[in-house]
Image (cartoon, rainbow over all chains, first blue to last red; front, side, top):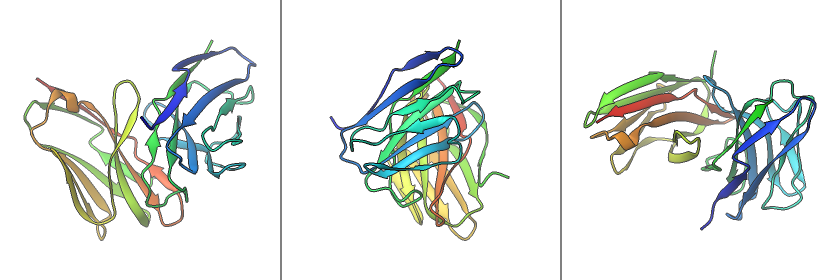
Length: 116
Length: 108
């Protein structure tokens, strides 16, 4: 079955620690996205990538980093510089990107990050 | 001001009722999307539309480009329809804007 997987489902971070959230897709999609969801707010874009080895900052990139070394994988690192990381993180992909284009985005199940 | 506004924020309905969720937007769009987020957090795309009306099972989505408004209707609602419904627009400026969602609870 094609789809997007995210791991872990829950992640705990200690103060000052970097943590990495995994996102893998086997849909052969070129574009991948990371969103953050907070209660009472719409999804906000952290980073997106339209092609391997290229990525763009979204609206709230500060305190986060990404890499896109493989088409299938788009890991997100939450660095210690992100002072309020507690949130639900969603990864998505679409066929060819062009953020805002007429493409359906396919979402992973999400990772909930909590700060200890 | 948010580029995408949804109403109502919360909605409780009896099983079998006809449900309408509204979405208004303020930007030029290439497409409007309706998404469903289940209690576990996963999101599924229900519709993508740029004009007219689409139907899938008991779900109907309409859009009025001139009025910058879209509605999602659920006919013969069922408890399994309980979820958060999110309206999102892909703008002509290559941005994606999400509404804050409508939380629907259908009571048996």
